[in-house]
Image 1 (cartoon, rainbow, N blue to C red):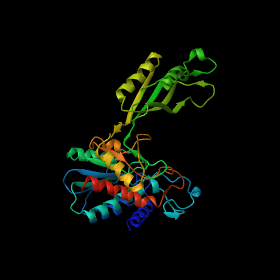
Image 2 (spheres, rainbow, N blue to C red):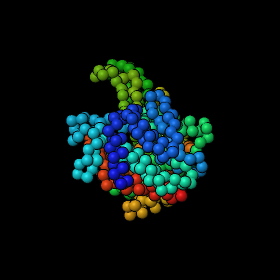
Image 3 (tube, rainbow, N blue to C red):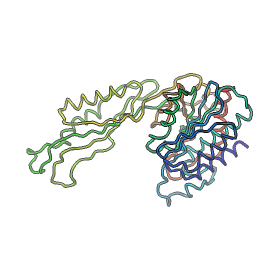
Image 4 (cartoon, rainbow, N blue to C red):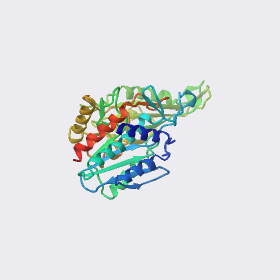
Length: 377
C-alpha cells in the first residue's frame, strides 16, 4: 500500500542521525530509489554538505520537489518520551526528530513519484529532486550551491514544490506561496569610556543611541500589500559594558533584523535606518547581511493545481500564506518562476517529541501525486 510505503520510508529517514549539516545517509536511501525510477543522480557537495540534484527526463516543463534532510538538534534527550532517532508509533502519531520537518515530506515526495511514474512511465516533461543537508544551519553550502551550479549551465525549473511543514492545524489547510525577505544589521555605536561617577568626562553610547532606537521601533516602514504583512524591525541582541558596575562603556553593539515585504527593497530599508541614526548625531557603523530576498508566486498554474489537488484529497480549501520565516525557496526563486510550499502540520517542529499524524502520510503523498498528474500528463 502507498500509505505503508510512505510511513516506512519516513521511519527509515528519521532513523538517520542527520543533525545539520550532516545527512546521516538519507540521500543514499532516497537516491537509490530515484535511480530505480530512471533518475540521474548528481551530488553537488560543498563545504561538508551533501546536496543531491536528481532528474528524470530532459523535456519541458521541469517540475521539482525541493527539501532538506538535515534536522535541528534534539535538545535534552531525557525530556523525549522516546529516542528522537528511533521512530516510534504511538496513539496514531509518528514520533521522531524530523517527523514533521521534513522527513515525512521527503518520503511522500518519493512515494508520490514512484506511484506516478509506475502509472505514467512516458509522462510529459521532467521531474527533479533538489535536496540538501544544510537548511537548518548556515544554509551557505546547501541549496544555494546547487542553484549556482544550475545557473552556470542554464538549467531552470518551471514549477517547484518545497516540502516545508505549512499546515496550521490540518493537512492541506495552508499553502505558502511566498516568503518575506530578511535583512540583518550589526550596529556599533561608539562613545567614550569613563568612570561612572564622572559622566561629564565620558560619553555613554547606550544613552546616546536610546532615542534613535525608540524611533526605529516605532517607525512604519511600509504598509505591506495583499500578499504580505507590513515590514517589521526587531532588536535581537544588545551587548555593551565591561562587566564592571562602575564603568561607562566605550561602545555598544546592537543586532537587529528586518523581515520585509515586496513593498520595500533592502536598499530603501538601509537608507531609512541610516537617515534616522544620522539625524541623532551618532558615531556609528553598520555591517549589513541580506539573508533572503522576498519572493511571491501569484495565482497561476502551480497555485491553482495545488489548490485543486488539496481540495480533491482532503475536501479543504487551502489558504495562501506568506507568514513565517525564510525557506530555501529564496535560493530557488531566481531559477523558477512558480514556487510553493506544501507540507504537514507544523505545530511540533523543532520541539521535544516532534511528531506527525500517521494518517496524514498517505494523504500528503496523494496530494503530491495529484499535482504531478495535472502538471505532467
